[in-house]
Image 1 (cartoon, rainbow, N blue to C red):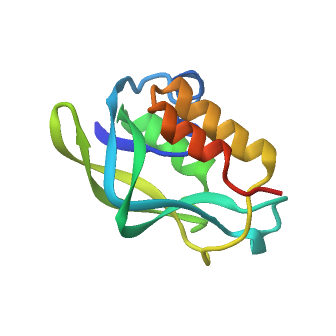
Image 2: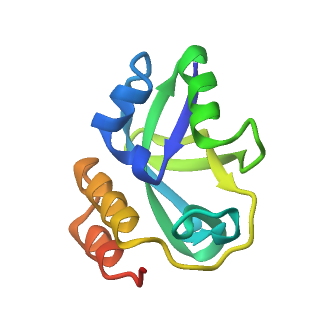
Image 3: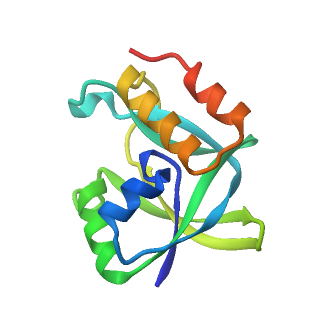
Length: 146
């Protein structure tokens, strides 16, 4: 098994249970020195897609999953890692259990653009469902969108 740090709609334990039924939630934590942003409008979706970039002044709330090899292969297909849309990147996540090494999907496209209101709302709902602090969820809901 490998450890996966979800920051987008995969923060939702309900969604991850459907997508990756063999991969239990281990807990939550933070990616210190990373910032949630959006990009990839040029790929033809209705809005920009969630991603993260390194930024020493920020942090991103994540859900940590023990991902089974079978679920990892399916998630790679679902998230577009096989096509190169997202690439896997190892990060250090800070959880109640201490620092752990996990991997994330990072969009391989230029940063910029706005997500749709629907996508941003789903991301905020997923963060809330995963137990993100109220101020983090509120900040997500106040971000600009299409």
